[in-house]
Image: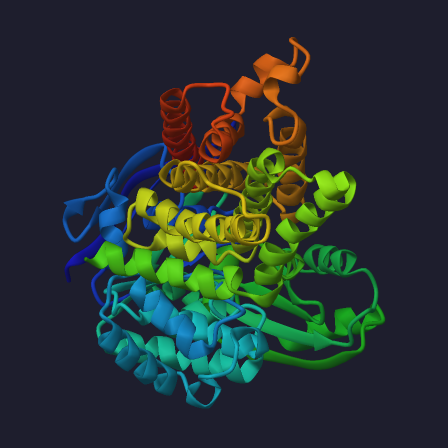
Length: 323
Length: 244
C-alpha cells in the first residue's frame, strides 16, 4: 500500500509545554487511521500541524511522497477537514454553505451546485437544503459539516471527534457514511475518544498520550495483546459508594486482576488468568453494591488501550464531556 | 482563476451576511444624518457646511468600517468558521483582501449620504472631485485596515467593540475632523500626525475648500504608506497569532 501521509519526528511546543514529542507515523492510501488518546494527548495539535493550522517546531510532513513541511498550503487542496465543532455559517442555508465551501477551492459554479445537491442527498439532508444552518439540529449540523469537507472531493479527510455530542441515530448514520466514503477510496484520518468507534471503523490505530505515540498497529494486532485476557464487566446501580474505594478494595482482594471504571455504573475486571464471576460479584455485594448484571466478555480495543496507557476510559469520557 | 473564485465568493458572502443587512444599511444612512442634524441645530442658520463636511464624511467612514470588520472577523473566529477560510488553498493575502474589500465598500457607501446631502441640500461645491473620491477611498481603506488590526488583537466580540471605540473616539478630536490640528495644543499635535485619519481628513478639506494644512501629495503618500504597512502588519500578525 502507498503511503499518503508521512509524519517524521513531528514536534510542537507551546512555550515550555511539549504538546507533541517527536512522533512519527504514516497513513496508507485508502485506509481509516485512528488517533486515540485522552484530552491533552496531542491529537488535535497533531492534526493541526498536518493541515497547516499549527506551525511545527520540528520534523517533516510528507504528502504523497512530497515534502510539504514548509508548503503546507499546497496540501490543502488534497485534504478536507472536519473540525471538532460544526463550523459553518449560521445565516446561510445548507445548500448555500456547501456551495460557498466549494467556491473556496475554486470549483466552478455549475460543479459546486451539482456537488452540493449530491452531497445533500448522500447525507439525507435534501429536505433541509433551504433551511438556515442555525435551524439545523446538532446531528444535522455535524452531517452538513462533514458534507462541506467533501465538496472539493479530497483524497484525505481529517475528522476530529466527528461523533461527539450528537444523538445516537446521527452517530450511526455518520459512522456508516465514514465507511461508505472509505469504500469509495477516500483516506480517513480520525481522532476519537470513543474507542469502540475506532475499533469498528479503523484499519490501523495509534494510541497517543502526553504528546507521544505509545503504539501503532492494526486493530486485530492490538487486540492480540489482550487476546488471552479474561474480562468481566459488572453493571451496578450508580451513585453507590465511592467508586475509587471500590476499585481499590477489589484490587486488594484479587491481586492478579486489573480493575477499571468503564462508566459511572460499570466496572471492568481484567485478568490474564481464568477468573470466575461469582467471587467478584460476592465481594461487591458484601460491600453493599446492588449488581444489575455481571458477564464474561471478549477483550476489546478499550482493554488494550487501558493496558497500554493505564488511562481509565471513564476519565477520558468525562474530560471530553467537560470540554 | 481558482483564487479569484474564492476571493469573489468570500466577498459576496460577507456583503450578503453582514454589510447588506438592514441594521447596517440603516446605520450607514442614519449615522451621517444624525451628525449633520446635530451640527445644523448647534449652528442654527449660520451652518457652514464647508467646515463640517470633511469631518462628517470621515466620521461616517471611520465609525462604519472599523467596528464592522473587527466584529465580523472576531465573530467568525469565535464560531470557528474563519478556520474554513484559513484552510482553503488560497494565500492569506487574498483571504485578507477578500475580507477587507467588503468593509471598504461599506465605508464608501457610508460616505455617500453626507456627500449627497451636502451637495444637493446645502449646495456645497466640491472643488476637486477626483481628490474627494481618492480621499474617501483611502479613508475607507485605512479605517478598514485599522479594524483588521483590532480584529487580530481581539479574542471576543465585545473586545473588538471596546478596542474600536478606544481607537475611534480620540480621533474625533485629534485628527482635525472638527477642530483643525493647527488649533490643537502644541504637545498634542505630534499625536495627531501619527494617526492616519488626520491625512485623510486633510485630503477631504482640500477637495472641498482647499483648506488643507499639509501638501496633497504628502497626504496621499503618507496614507498609502500607512495602508501598505497596516496590511502587511495584519498579515504578519494573522500568521503569528492564528496559525500558532
